[in-house]
Length: 341
Ligand code: TXA
Ligand code: MG
Picture 1 (cartoon, helix red, strand yellow):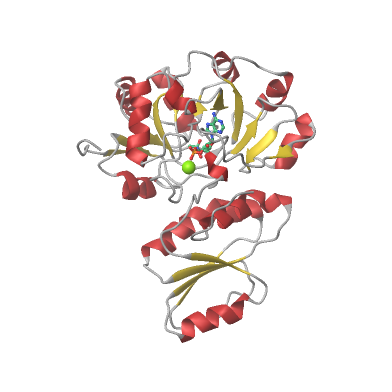
Picture 2 (picture 1 turned 90 degrees about the vertical axis):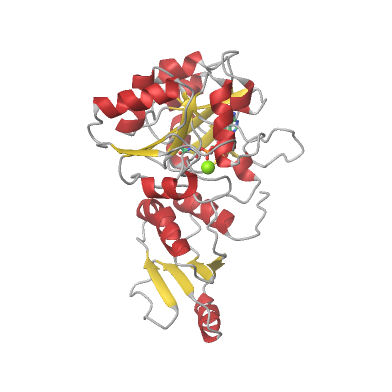
């Protein structure tokens, strides 16, 4: 980072985004600046996707490795189509899920700068459903390159305060539209191959995708490539600073042992009744359905992280497909885990 920026925070109504704030944010974007904004999944850090210099600032602000490509957010299917060099029939079938938490990877058009795709042949496209995200794209009149608005490898932000804590002084503007309703990132599907490959499970269920286009392969990573097919698959991502551990069925004994040796432990659990209070123990009670759990997960981890605990332990959620995205993020959040699957 060459010199610190003054990061401005502006409130915006999530249901009826105000024109003045949008105009201000749009002018920052058109001048090549960085604006964080809410989406239905997590906060994104946006820049003009057609301006390589602006996109370079995203990498700089996040400390993001140059080999990790960035999703381009557009207002509608036609704008997506204009940035793809090919548009297979399955893209049309899936575009019915837009606006929404689905990202499609397609061959890129020459208009898309190298830096957006990390030099790779494909571009990732998504039409976000959040009114602020949509209105911002329209107001700027630009496709917006936007990764999650966190420092690289850290937890994604679901509230403006999470963005501020990570990126204050590194970006121009944060639009505070309140908490993101979905709480987990979009599902990333590679349509440049047939059958399509699931690159990252996310808020849109695999079932909803298969319903529309039939079989989908679950991606095996290809670490030998110089750009990564979806680097989220390879590295420790979405991690709190506090060590995190997933608990098996007999995990309670382990927690007692940590507490007995004087550790301060955060326990993330859907158990009912909730575990009894104990000295050193902070319990975060989670909903028992996957959508409710996913919506709360990052906010709970951000909160526990701020307490400076010795460790966070998480009851292993059910292993069914409905929990795919939650289980994926929890696995990656375990400290030191290099997830090559
Ligand atoms: O919900 C979301 O997707 C949020 C909001 C802001 O839209 N964005 C997000 O972006 O999670 P990010 O950068 O944190 O994660 C994007 C994922 C990464 O795993 C990246 O490698 C993959 O999508 N990706 C981006 N462009 C790609 C491309 N051209 N080919 C393959 N994978 C790509
Ligand atoms: Mg991210």
